[in-house]
Amino acid sequence: MKEETERDLNEFVDAWQETTEKNKEVFLHFLEYLGQKKDVTLDFIPRPGLTYSLRAVHAKQKNKSLFVMVDVIEGEPRWLSICFYGDMITDPEEKGDSVPGGLLGEDAVCFDLEEKNELLIGYIKARLDEACQNAMSQ
Image 1: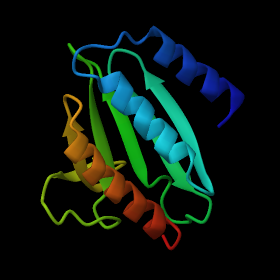
Image 2: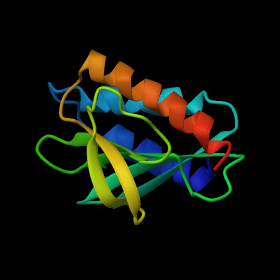
Image 3: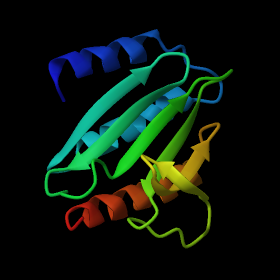
Image 4: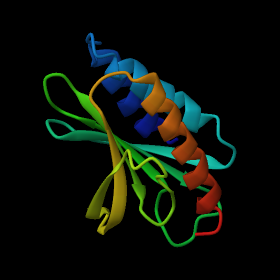
């Protein structure tokens, strides 16, 4: 992550007051999980008042600019939307929402987390692993 980007991310996290929903905790969990993946680079794009996007790209990706986008959506309280390209994951339990053109103009599958949910977090982590693996050939 670039120094300026990392600074923006740290400022955002430091200013974020945790709520009973524990969405900050979940965001930090995904940040750490993605940060530990080999050959994955993270980017952070703040759009104050709208979203704060954590994006992950694999070094071997050629045709897509990311394999997952973890958005913090402004609201009371803030909540998370984790989006994948529809052709990069499966959703065997149909827990995600199909969003035509929803990820940089391409069809997406998004998982909304309004509060900490360990089962859904585990399910999303399996999708993260799947997308990261598929990103190497995309």
